[in-house]
Length: 372
Image 1: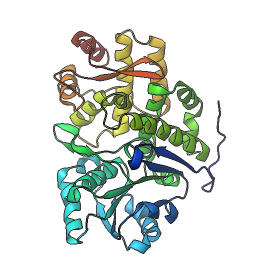
Image 2: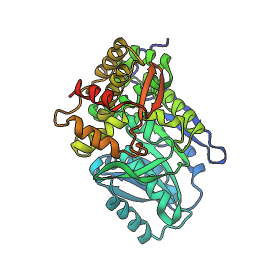
Image 3: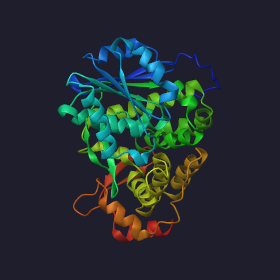
Image 4: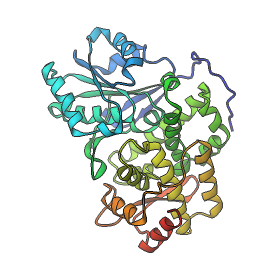
């Protein structure tokens, strides 16, 4: 098992490319440091003359100038949105549409998402719907978006009654994950991203989970080699699953480990009060406990899941403001619920997940009551 020594050099060469194989809609995920300034990675994926970079008030001051210089041949338009999950709405999408229309952007234009998962989801949805679909590129600047939300083509916005309930499957032309942007990421956001990294080890790759057990502190210390390996492996796991099941008709659903509980927490607490990764981390522990309640895994497995989540600096206990009825009501409205059944992703073993809509009401209530 490879264990990385600390190496915080901003110039370490850990570049790699992962391909999402979707036939003629395949696209690369470029991962490495100092990629924002590399026009050769972006220009081949821009097919028209109009480019618009969409970012937010937090990320734009840090990276918009560099990216604009990289794409200077296109004289890119820029749109800067407010920062936060609470702005992931149709009203914000309308602001994007209006600016594009004012600038007379055509169907050959390209949108570039520069930011975290909220920006990526909104820009992808705007691209999917503006003039019935235009090109877009993902440039994720948070760990969570680099390992998860920027890959796979899920786009959308939130509604007061549910998260990501309005959206589309729409693949980007390219994903550029510049790991050097993580050096300006607040520590809380870095930790939140680790929830999705840990998820990949739990659902499909036990050896990766073992590696994370040895290297979680190196990732938190922003070790270049550990970051590159964690992000690259996460992207490889997601790319393989998306290639097999693009629109979540089957196996792709296992990527939602912890999300049924997590989305309920986000909705109940108000978008942005719990970060997505924090809610998912707690949801992963709750899913592990439900798996144990269903006699799929043992108490020691649950203990290991809770331990690695805690070592990542993430919460493992749901908010005290939520009760059993609140959880069940919100989970029943989740977009993954079908015909009144709540679909959970459960662990058959560490490193192996499955979709289950067969959890009994009693087992669910017992599992929730043990945590609330």
